[in-house]
Image (cartoon, rainbow, N blue to C red; front, side):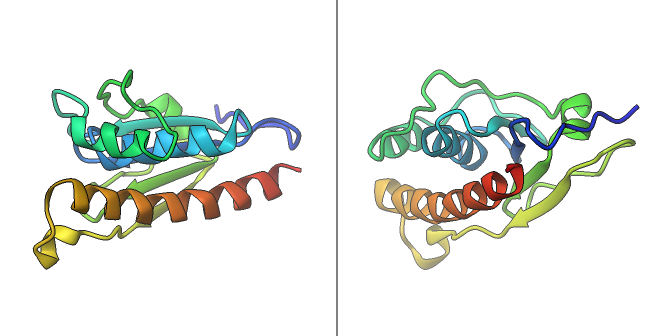
Length: 147
């Protein structure tokens, strides 16, 4: 049974990466901060790691988002089937559609500064800024569709 949301309800998004400790958590925290309740936000990993990246949490906090209380989680097939949008961050994570899935599956090939020799906090800020631009664009799209 698929669950379809009424046109007036809050749009939902699931951000996914491999470990669910960095990029997907950053995207979720940024969306929560930017959307201020206008979007239901989730994150998960295809192979969840042990913990949230402290450096990712630190650089996200610099722009007013908070991912410090998050924990890494696997993809919930029920959630995957019901959200409006699934955003996979990076080409390493692969999300297979599930039966009854009603949302759109998108992959963001995010900036990877380490490929240019940029590491540490500078790398993480560039990753954050790339994800933040994409999140703000997605927020505009989701809230325009929700009306």
